[in-house]
Amino acid sequence: MRAARSTSLWLAAALACALTACVGGGDDDDEGERDAQAVGQVATALDAGGELSRLLVPLEASADLGLLGPDVARVRKVQSAITAFRALVANSTCLGVATDGATFLDLTFNACRIAFVLTLDGALHAGVAIEAVGGTPSAVVVSLSSPGLSLAGPVRTRRMAGELTLRHPIRQLGAPVELDAELQVSADDDAPVTASLGAAWTVSGDCVTITAGAQLSGELLGSLGPIALSGDGVQRCREECPTAGSVELSYGRGKLLAWTYTGAGTAIVMGPRGKRVEVPLACAGG
Image (cartoon, rainbow, N blue to C red; front, side):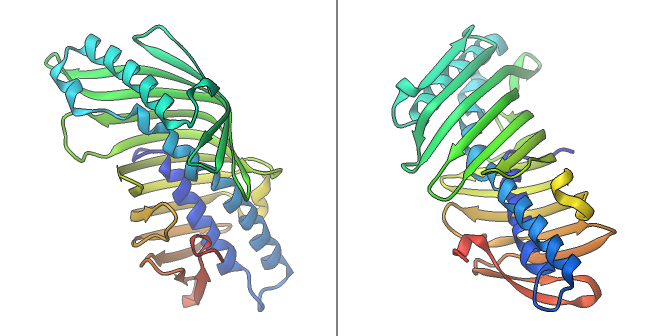
């Protein structure tokens, strides 16, 4: 599955959050209420990717790499990533870095403070490669693995482990970052959910535009699994609700939900048999 990056985790979270409200409700039977509760737990677990995905920004390509030879560009990318990761945390003494200076970096986070209110712990390995066309660097490809990252905030602790592959064109202005991933994500003490992800996105400041797909599985889903998610052109800025984009979700025995984002704190979800449900979104503080 190919598309853009770890922000796809955030998208999956948003989709599952909406499903929680949609399949629940006063007219649902006991089974529906159990389903709603299960998907709510999945939504919370997948929210792990919301902030953890932003940790990958230091590994993106920069235009200057296209002016260098492939080997020199790879060294430059490794060195610039180390600098960017150190700038990401409030105090760089919490960050351990091991590297050969040319092909990989191993990062260890020990109670690192980021974004003022978040604390990051865990380890991340990144292998860096440069694709070239005619001897000119054309893309940065990063293979990532983590035995576990945790991000503790005021409300919940998010966790992620697994493997990702990122690809970002170097000389194409505004080109999306691409991601393929097999991850396990969870929050607080919930059981993990396995997510197979593909996404493509662009980041501008605190805002992300993403097209993505995901398939979710795990015991936590119960009879709802597997869940398939897709989103097209979803735009979201940090601390705001999505302002654009459309979403489709299928679960269980082929039940299908669809909705669009408008920037409002609710979404009108179209369900089976034409059912329409107005769903409060977590981004609105509901």
